[in-house]
Length: 373
Image 1 (cartoon, rainbow, N blue to C red):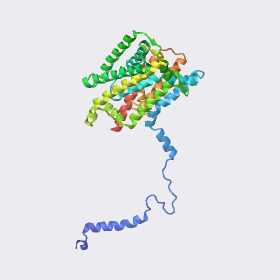
Image 2: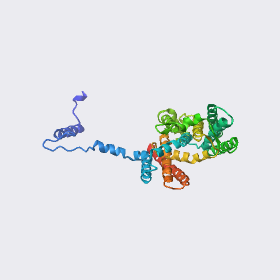
Image 3: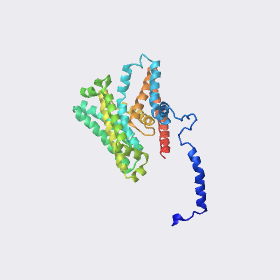
Image 4: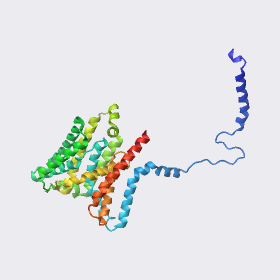
């Protein structure tokens, strides 16, 4: 049999090596064992607290929470500089309540931005909704509920029009929304005769700024509810992931089977709808509408979206980051105004914040793409 045959030269060499190695293996201590008569060797283990602190101070976490930390620093600086005016409960109630309209509008703008499109008509859409509500309710005697539905319907229609022109015809979103926004502003001036309309139903005011909860106007909690709803959609639903995928790469999304055009169009429609809701809130806070002031929301809304893209989820537009950015910006502007700086600082602050935010979010997005690659 083969097993009984004598081994060749190679077999002799192997057996001899194994026999020579056996005593050494028996004499060597096992891995991790302590040799007899030798002191135990301390293992290189970092304390749990040190490892936790390292994770907390990691570059990724610092990047995610940097805007929050800067916001806290800004509040601390102005609270020390103006403790009698800035660091007061009434001041923070005003800050959070007065920016709810901007927050809602920024959330509406965030949707087309996520899919890679611009909506420059978003502020005009807000003006259209608020003015239509005021004209129908005050001048024409229409009930406040039908007037609100008409305002939101007009804003949603503008979103449908924007998306159709962009997706079906293929016109650049920047050009389309610049044009439709100008048309919407013209309609606002036409139906109002370029005059302020005041005196909307008291019920609308009561459900926006007329009543409060925990010291904050009700309008603030509408903004929180919208932020949390969009946060859930973006983080925990397939729709949120599809929006992100389309924004990151339309060609790849098409190859993956996503209906890119439908998703882009839907983002314009929902963005218009949210702008209409912001118009309701704006009409309630003003107890009417004026044809010009809504345009001042455009630059702050873009600044908030891009600045928010540097926080929480760096490199992507996200609702929580947008929320933080809105109130970070207004906290700084309010502090400067209380220090006696003239009103032009608001434009400088928002304009500078937009440029810096676009640069930071672009860098964050490129870094995220490099890490994923």
